[in-house]
Length: 229
Image (tube, rainbow, N blue to C red; front, side, top):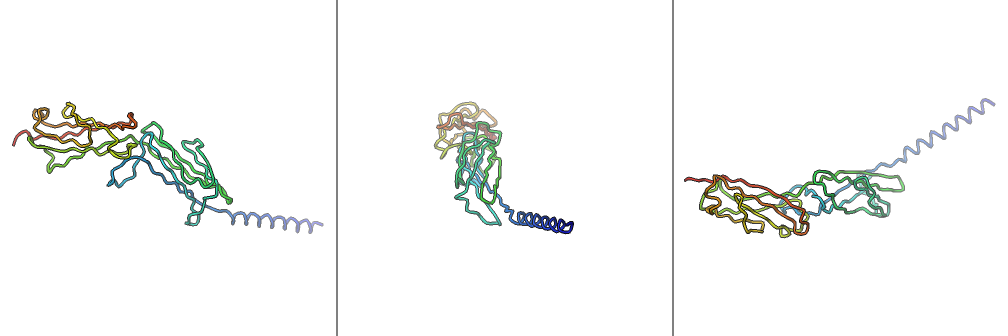
């Protein structure tokens, strides 16, 4: 009798090990790859990645990679979460969009969960939110500006929620005196009264989004003025 008990126990152990071994062999691994793009303005020659400003639309996409190959997830459920809150889900919902919050020194957290017949796979990332920015550019053979000359200063905007710089209004001032120019380029005659009495020329400009007036950026450029030959 004891012999039969040992045989039964041995068979049960063998079957259990076989089931565990089979389950381990059938475990499927995969990685969810998340990419994103901010729908805002950046110069055509900008080689970096445009970061979203507050209220910028962000488009996010997900793909599932297994064994170094893309997997067709057009028919499986994909769940999206933004800032740890459920956003939406749907079969084959590989791409979603949302708007960044109002904080310009934080992050937007995005998580995607892909639910397949072989298991669930997920990944998350943080997208930095930055304030819009403007840079002043001017062409001069030297760093010193001579009197009785003319310089042209151009504004280069970054991260505004616009289609082109034409969607911005610019406010210029030279050594504290406002100009009438509202465009993104300022042509300045150095011999003008507000500049000849100074050792430097201070050019300040602010840019405002016409469609979203609270989206504003400011900057200041100081140029040395050659007062004697």
